[in-house]
Each structure stands twice: as C-alpha cells, then as structure tokens.
Image (cartoon, rainbow, N blue to C red; front, side, top):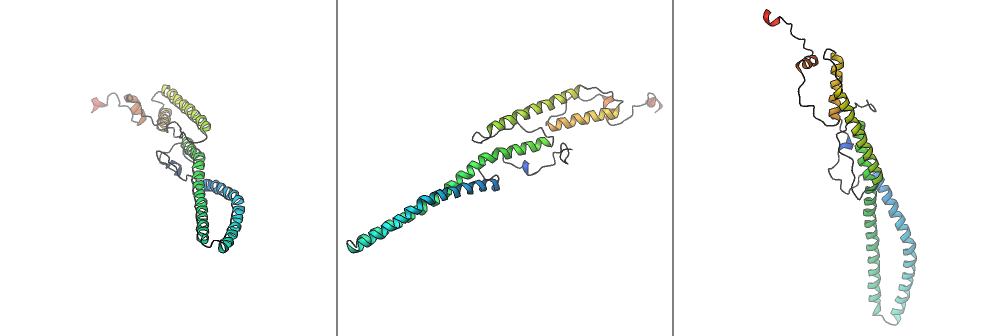
Length: 229
C-alpha cells in the first residue's frame, strides 16, 4: 500500500493519466498561468501609462492651440486637424489592444513552458508511486524549461527501473520445491506482479507437471489408482 492505494492497480486511472500524445500549447494550469500573465500585463500597462498620460496631455494642449489658430487664420485646416486627431486616437487604441493580446499570448506561452514539464513529471511520478514501471523514459519538448531537472529525473527513473528488473531476475533464479506450496505460490505471485509493473510477458516455457499440480493444489495420483479402476 502506498498512500492508501494498492501498490499496483491498472484500473486506477486518475486525471493525471489523461494527456494527449503530443502536448500542444494550451492552458495546462489556469490558476498558475493566468496569475502570472495578468501580473505581467498589469506591469506593462502601468509602465505604458507613465508614458501615455503626459503624451496625451501635451497632445491635447497642442491640438487646442492649433485648433484656435486654424479658426482664425486657416479654417480649412480644422477638418485636417480633426481627422489627424481621430487617427491618433484609433492608432493608440489599436496599439494598446495589440499589446494586451500579444502580452496574453506570450505570458500563457511562457508559463506553459514552465508548468508543462512539471505537470508531465507529476503524472509520470504518480504512475511510479502506484508501482507501474511500464511507462517509457521521461522526456520533455525541446522548448520547455527545467531540462536539467527532467534529465536528472529521467536518470533516476532508468536507475530504479533497472533495479526492479534486476530484482525480477534474482527472483526467477530462486528455486522452491513444489511441496512448499505457500512459499511457491507467493514467489510466483510476486514475480507476476513484477512483470505486470514492467509490462513484461510471462516466460514462454511451461512449468513442469509437478509444479502445476502444486499451484492448483491437485494431489498426485496414487500409484495403484489406475489398476484399481
């Protein structure tokens, strides 16, 4: 038992096991990703406001001055000034909207590259803690972060899996006489469990007849039973 669960149970499929074959860019952890994306967006908008506020203040002042001068000297310039002002307002709104969209995409992309490997590793560790060693070697995408951590965990997983395979080979070398039925059955149950954990097939050669009788608890026939029949 590990954390209240059976050591190995293929039927226990939690949410960590549901993942696509190739992880694509998406919101893998909304709370984490939106938290830091919104923080980045607020920081950029506050920084932008320190530039935009005085710029708009002086721009409106200049527009008012030129508007008064145009009314007196060149009334035909009023339409040109008004059109120029609307273009500046539209361009500013478009720039701020584009900045928000790009910042959101970049923030979600960056946080996905950070949290994605950790979620994949959590899923992989979850299967290992339940005794399932059938998973392939742990790998992450080339653009993901924490590559050193992923390589260290991959090396640890390969080492522990090789140790489990060595333990299975040692168990297969143990010979227990069939008459010790309890110990014999316990040994083969343990070997079957190890093979299931590593997704290995049982050995092809069949057991001797005396071992089969011991497993199924079938008593051997008496020497004179056939003659008596």
